[in-house]
Image (cartoon, rainbow, N blue to C red):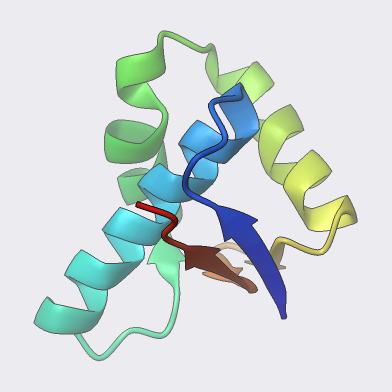
Length: 86
């Protein structure tokens, strides 16, 4: 399992932290073990102003680095933890 620092301020860290927030909300309200794609695009990346094609590039880059698992036609599963350093 990969651990990310919440103190980092890069784009990918920001998006990873946002995905972690979405995952927490889903776990509290649903039995799903993944984050559905529509939720990723509306809540995760929608506010950043990144195009949908760029969003896919970011997701596949995160997959290549082992941060997420893509569940075809459904969504993603996170494979990292966040370390709070505050």
